[in-house]
Length: 119
Length: 280
Image (cartoon, chains in turn blue, yellow):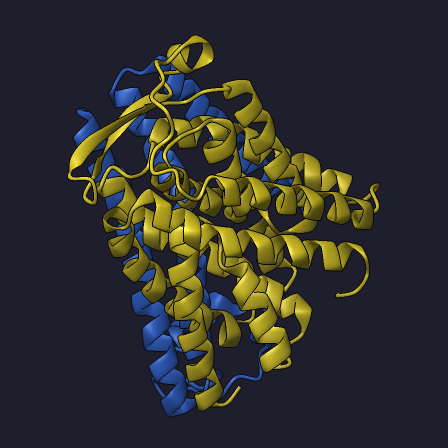
């Protein structure tokens, strides 16, 4: 993989993450103006769930609740840098750059430890 | 939140994303005071929204910076080793160290660096340097296309161990205090490693998303990220960062430093005020 192509892949991952998240969040905002944050775009009964509770996201998404769509958008946004690091590991490996494959893998490992271990 | 308050938060966040993307910082210095002081939002939820804003600034701007070759990905990935491990150390230290002493120290360091930045305001590019030692072995050198100067500018990192140590400190600070890490990252690359200012800012932007993502999971799980606040912030910041990322390649390095300096002074004063107990 050429450096130009590598940059294009990393940049592409960031663009896909940012655009997906922005689209979800925009739908959620306009949805909330119509049915309210806890309402449902398919007419399910309103939910009294707390906005900061991310555990009910799947049933919320199935009922097309703006609050759940917003939560999904935020999760995609937060996951984007992590996916970018994974893409960099693959990119450096395809470049056969052993030093930077190892460095990036180290970053990914530490990142996963902090995501999983520190709660 | 009413719809008009949401709109105001969105508009303020555009400014935060714009300044953050140009200065290489997360925009938390704008988002947190705006949410708490203007809108009376709980500090816990304001910090949750600010973590999201850091990631939005980073990913929104870095998409363009990486494509335009403003970001040095090797420098970024190498230094992320230091920031991510520092962030874990900071989160562990938070249980045993009194933050007030550290806040005062950090405030003094940031204000001292601001004085040094002021002395360097006239400098467009750091003096030419051949890569030696660690910079050579780690290939921490390269070039970027400068649309302002109309040529390709080459650079090589200097004082790599010092830069790496400062980045570790930036990680500790962000894990421990949750602030100021973007400013320290820019300083590590600009003042210690002597990379061009635009490369320092763009590479810092590239890195802050990863540092923030490492702690964002904790904030999400703890219920500190309220979508009704974080979503207008994130959308505004994304818009601002997209505009900033289009501007940066065309600005001179001098101008970028001129934007970074007041941001640095404000972060330094805020940190000092928090450390001395003047502000929560």
